Image (cartoon, rainbow, N blue to C red; front, side, top):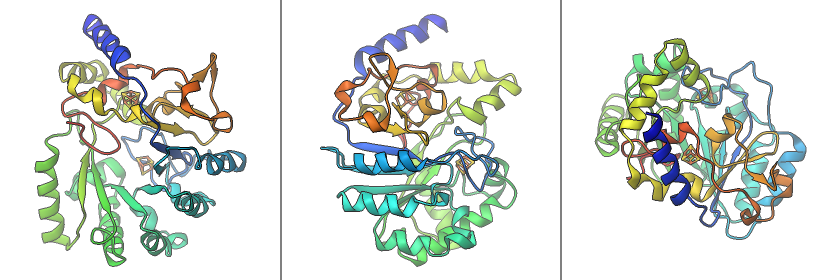
Length: 315
Ligand code: SF4
Ligand code: SF4
């Protein structure tokens, strides 16, 4: 395992270089109304880390960076940040495509009653996590009642135009220790079941493997299955995924203002550096000043099977 892993690391370091920066993925913090078993952010209602005002100001300033095309807002539950809508409006004003990563149940909170209609009116793309179309699987990952809340939220989203005129994509991730299966086939199954049983429409399904980071990593360690899972990732390594790895044209911003190659590196505290020091959003002028993309063992989850990214399978 050791040798194979270093061969992959070497291939990664030679091939995975930065392209032109396209996407800012901004993580507004670890505060979330849910506490999912698989969460790589280790987010939850008890977490108090949310994006500081000074960092938010720097993020908003950086939306004008030349060549930037997309603002991808994530968390935690990003909708719960007091400046969430301001950030969204600034992204739109800067001419960016704005995406929000939504856990669905947050939309049922009284404070969020206006959010779906505001997002739809601004044609903000929603990518919503729904790890299965079966109630028991969703509830086992996300907590009792999570599936019913997700269905109720999806109905609200459909009622304001999501899944029809406004893009709504769902995210699947496996319940157990297996990798995500065939994305096109699973999308068909999701569409059939959600339409027939609940009358719900959506555009695309994105499949994501579970990353050995955060709570899923703790779970692997606790059940003594970490090495088994890493071996599965290693055995499933697919070099064709390298071309499309999201870290090549995305940069991830943390709640406290540091820059990372992706959200997973953020959770593992592997910042982008400049002359050996972690790079802050307030110091960013362009990414030519940044260190090269770092390899870590959890990168294998992006490169296993059909690959995985925030936009689903890669090949
Ligand atoms: S997986 Fe998403 S919804 Fe669940 S606790 Fe983490 S951030 Fe919140
Ligand atoms: S984990 Fe991050 S840095 Fe590693 S391959 Fe995936 S996107 Fe790139």
